[in-house]
Structure formats: C-alpha cells, structure tokens
Image 1 (cartoon, rainbow, N blue to C red):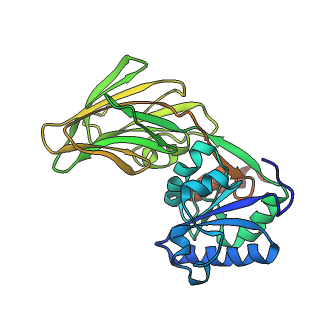
Image 2 (image 1 turned 60 degrees about the vertical axis):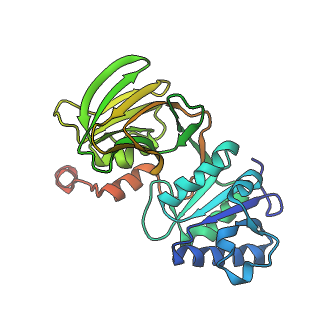
Length: 302
C-alpha cells in the first residue's frame, strides 16, 4: 500500500452503533479528517445516527463496499467489533486498525485519544502490517466456507448436557470424549475462548492451530497444538438437546443433533495495522495481570 499524503489514503470507518462512546469518537475523527482534507468513507449504520452526516457524499456506504475501496479500515469498538469488521476486510486483505473504547484489547489496541495521531502516522507510513492467519470451516456436505480470525467452536446447545466429540487431524484419529464442546483456534484466538478453557497462550506469529476441549468429562483430555497446515475434522453429536457451530462467536449452524466440520488454514490472512499501540507482550501482561516478580529483582539488584 502506498501512503505519503492525505490525498492518496482513503480511510474506511466502522463503528459499534450500540456504544455512544464509539459514535462520539467517530464524530470527532470525522471532524479532524475534514479539517485536514483527509478522505474517508463512513458506514451507513453509523452515518444514520449522526445527523450532520446524513447528506454527506462520504457517508452511507455498505461495509462491503468500504472494505473494497478503502486503503485502511478504522474500527471503533472492542475486539468483538474488530472481529465483525475483519469479515469484510478479509476478501480484500484491507489493513485494519482497531480503536478500543476504554478496555485494552488484543486486537483493538489504539485508544480513542490516540486516533488523530494514529491517522497521521498511517499517512506518513510510520506503521507496519502484521499478518494473522485465519481458519476456514466447512460443514460436511456443503460447499460454503466459514472464516474466523479467532476460532471455530462446536458446542452443546439447548437442553444438551454434554455432546460426544470425535476429533481427527489430517484424517488420523486424535481422540473421542464427552464434553461441553471443542475449540479450534488460531494463535490470535489462543487468548480468547481457548484461554478461558485452559488452552495455551500462543504468540500470534506462530504457524500452529490449537485444539482445546471445553469442560471434557475426563482429566486426560488436554489442549493439543498442531501444525498450521493441518486439516482438522470434528464431529459432534447428542441424543438430547442440540449442537451449535460458531465462527468468532457468530452462530453458523444450530438446532442440529449432529454436526461435522472440516477446518483448515484460511485462504486469506488478516492485515492488522501495528506499531501504533502496545507491543504484544505488554498487552498480554496487562490483560492477564502478569507482574514483574519484585522478589527476584530485589535480590539481584545492587
């Protein structure tokens, strides 16, 4: 991507319409851009609730069109808003900058107060692109694929107390177990749902996929890390209630008694704008409340 002047960079703007802080931040950003002559495209749902934007030529575009024509997407919201925006950016590999609104996120790592500075840095090309692998999931017997930056999950739903799961890696049988579900995550997603179930923290640049059972009814069922080039097949079934399949928290298949998914590396990667917010390990320490062990440093200092 070539940058260097406000005339050559078109910013796409997505926002969480359910958060007033996001709308306020979008409004202030637009005012800044217009004063500087910076080109932008604003999504229709956000424009509709900002009265002064109703008649603007730059407002009212669909997310799909914005992702296609913008050079950089700015997403105002938390990691959930980022995950939704990424779905539109994926086909075009449009770089995405996440703006958090009070909570430090693993994906949205620039604060609302830093947005103006971040825009100037992007125009001046003082940033870098970090590529994150994605997952593509396909339901057996169907051609449509589902894409996820964080994870694809197969879990119990409705009145199901537990589901039976069979897992295969590259057509080789891995394990069978009873559980609440199973998570297939990217390194990026290792700090999301997978971490909450006892999965490992994996550095985003790692070329691996993490398989994490959810509350398995056996102590021997543990997370497994496999090659990022693996094809993973998971089969979930239940005699009571139903099974649900989700990609980045969005339900894809539900009210099923049996679901078989084939999951592998996605064709597209996510391009995240980095170098403008905290470094990964800094974010990790802050989110997980990891601290420096002062006992060690007290003993070794002086």
